[in-house]
Amino acid sequence: MEENLKIPAHVALILDGNGRWAKKRGLPRQLGHKKGCETLEQVVEDAARLGIRYLTVYGFSTENWKRPEEEVGALMRLLLQYFTSEIDELNEKNVRIRILGDIDGMPGGLEKQKDALHAAIRRTHENTGLQLNIALNYGGQQEIIRAAQKLAEHVANGDMEPEDIDRKAFESELYTAGLPDVDFLIRTSGEMRLSNFLLYQLAYAEFYQTDTLWPDFDRHAYDEALLAYAKRNRRFGGV
Ligand code: IPE
Ligand code: IPE
Ligand code: MG
Image (cartoon, rainbow, N blue to C red; front, side):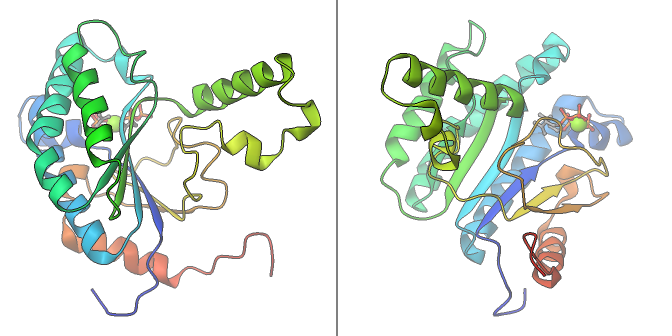
């Protein structure tokens, strides 16, 4: 990677294509997810090295529960594995973990996962390095509706007037409260859609897509994406 390159402060990732990666090799989809997890570990490590401040990763959407039970089970096992085997190393690297989404609204039978997520948040809370946000049981529309409900409660309780609802108040009720807007969104595997990810926060993000399937998203692919970002001319509606 070249020195002095313009690095986005907040990168969001829709890591897609694990299933197709496995299918191409005649392997079960689960193995694609396993390989995808390894790719994620590398990408997180590189983000810290490159000076990215916030990395927000789409791990599991509110719609992903529609997948076959066997695949959901495998993903939940991987999630637990990631949060138990990686947490020491992430903590040592000064990474702060935050979860975006409805952890407690995950189906029953996932108590171990929920405990591991809460433990990781607590344990890394004071870390000052890379902030790793993992979107789990996350939906962008649900997040916006939830914020509207919370604001309505404040108004109903008399703590707030309707005209006090401005960007700042609204953003403080999103899962991403306190985070800056996304600068750069990467989606792998060639799909050109948002799939209900960060609908509010992506307002002025630069969008990058690559046909590379997520498990193949190596350092070279990452560098290529960041190089593309460095060449973008962001105008935010100006000239
Ligand atoms: C992304 O890979 C991982 C998750 C959604 C959890 P997919 O599982 O969506 O892989 P494809 O899109 O079917 O290839
Ligand atoms: C988006 O990928 C969700 C995650 C990466 C976790 P999907 O594979 O679920 O999205 P669609 O179904 O192709 O839109
Ligand atoms: Mg997919």
